[in-house]
Length: 204
Image (cartoon, rainbow, N blue to C red; front, side):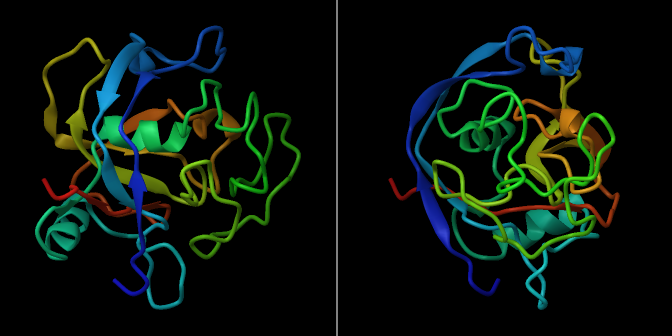
């Protein structure tokens, strides 16, 4: 992938799941769970196509094969790694507080239905990076992660035919752009608002 730039995400602890008193939270984001994440690398930008736009219309299997084809240790991020990297130390619904920042997140309408965004897919890395130096973690396109779908964090049974997507897309309402939002999608599905980014294990 052209311009594949990896960022070292430091090890740390975080609380995964919806924040307290989040009126948009769902049962899929519970129970809140403290997670320890080992250091790893994550691509600064979403995977892109030749025009510099996020690579979309790609199935989970195609995304996973693309990552593994880059070499040893390359893969899709786990769901835990993704949320940890998205939060980048924040403990609020969005990394920037109680609402998304249009300088960091590409989204079209606010919760009142007022237009705040450009209304289209934007080039990867168009906006400000988060505290870990990562772009487009929320909005622009949803992102495939490695995990099979679980209806909640208490469940131990993964649905291998459904894979988790995170982050929300440019045409989603802000409630679906929260750091804890998650959904399941058939692993063979291709959509024009679903892409991915690349993770890599650090050398031992």
